[in-house]
Length: 194
Image (tube, rainbow, N blue to C red; front, side):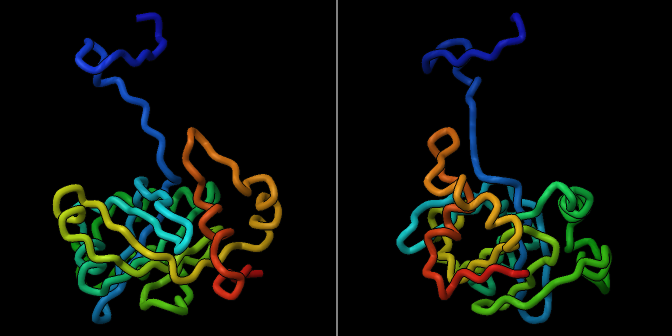
């Protein structure tokens, strides 16, 4: 091949060459019975805007999934390039393997409290979404797909104000980007952190 990627019709020799576009790489956090964890999740995207719903794919073997299923809630922490080292660290370590500690203590991660759920929110991110799980056992067990309702959202005011006007209603490859969820929440649930 000449280096270009092409997609053929189903059943053709290139039917496996699929272009997939999804939401940003995020950090998903959860807590239950005093245990907490944070993991990297790339398959996070908007499902609906009224009410605001997000889908998240979380493998059945992850420790964070155990906490989410037990608590019925999760937080989505949208990181930025300045935190790439943290994303790498939490994405390559299992909280289950850390004895007598967790990833927050292990890596010196600072958090603040969520207002609507019991999950840690990671300081230094650009957006945070507090989500309650909508129980869909078939999707969860068959596809590792969790459907959640966003019950609170926060954004770094400096970044949010800079890009909010540009991103309002903008789509990338036909998919609304993460910021749109925060823009669609009622103003009393959207708080810009200074």
